[in-house]
Image (cartoon, rainbow over all chains, first blue to last red; front, top):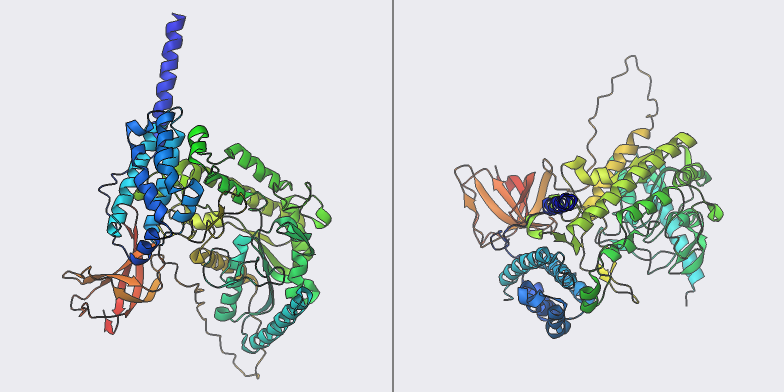
Length: 155
Length: 483
């Protein structure tokens, strides 16, 4: 009986903690449907992202496998993505610096958020903790950024 | 060749001559009171983040000390001169990026090099009011004493390789909430976390004497204020608006910060604001001096209804990550410079608040008595005009700017009028467009219409589903057409 009670209490606590966490985390809107504003001036951003900021586009393409189960199922899978795809784009800090200089304010924020989401997905590789939320974040930001890049005529 | 010492001498002479000339001009035109004014402190008092108009050449270090007259202290002084006729012949502006409270009474340490001048001595070189005392002293200290920029850097990217992130996590904010609170409590107790190159244990007082923050405020008031003087201590605003108020398009992160990290920093600023307010009250009671607290947290939170921190759905008074805002030092991760400081609007709003806090205490001098007459005419009451700090784009505010229609978005005609989506020269980039409604559908506007002057009133800020903002204006005049 004691074991059964203890087991019940543990399940109840775990469920409570899970529900608490779910309540706490803000929900995401549908990134494919939120209306995007008209681009004010695409030229400067085009020049930047085709020149000094080109690694950001490389990151944007390279990060796609991190939104899939196959790319993030364990640490070894994540390391493969890092080795084959993220390394050519650059280090986290160099990409952060590039993101901060994107002329288009919306694209700048979206690149910064994508970079942060990539880091969060990788951080979840080892234990799997928080991976669903991290992948959801990355998918969200990649979709917003896809749409912004299209509006900037960079896709 | 001009040596450093000669350069200092030349700068001091130029500054003195300018001050004398300015003082003479002001005395001639003045109709308000004559006061002396000091603005001192750290980057949040120096105007860092305010945009154009920086002066980087100071006698301390020509390339180091970034200052802007758009900072709240100098801006308030300038506005009182221009709009209230105040004469401020003795003005000093000794705020500088990176300064800590101990810098005021102790020799400065710049980039690790000990200087033979304190911030107080630098102040005195700029202005010498009678007795070396000022009528208005504004200051902002504490952020650097807490090592807050290091906390921010830690929250950004502490790891520089993807492998490290996969193996050990993002890093994130290295300081726990309790650790941040402990730093704040230590600051209040006079044990700053960051003493900027000084030996551990250096306090805020002269000779590095350890005193509490409230004693520091009392000492500043005792040493610097005239008998009628006011010391205004400015607190710190929330850097990022609470995540619950972010635009939906931002998801769960903004400016590299996860939502929970931004909220954690916000709670730390709330604690700092609460403790600084208390320190000011203690200083006022203990010293009997007029020491006041200007809560930028309260101001930028808009009373809890309209947040002005970075990432807000409303009008941002804080910079997020700026284009020039990330610099990599020697092995340092990411150094935000003008990032996460107030922008021009934030400093202007603070200046307006500051003016409201001090103006009534310095009435205009009584007019000299005129020739005696049998009946003295009653002076006509003159309504005081509001201080104009420039547009803050708040609802109800007057709007006037040069705009062009953002073709190919066609004007939207209705029976009541026409709505024009416009790009306006002075409207900050945080608004993608200005939507001007003109209550006359006959407005003759075509793609060949160039730049037009739009006058009217700000009626609000519209936000799209993903958080992008458009300024809403009710236009009473567009070009030569009046409503």
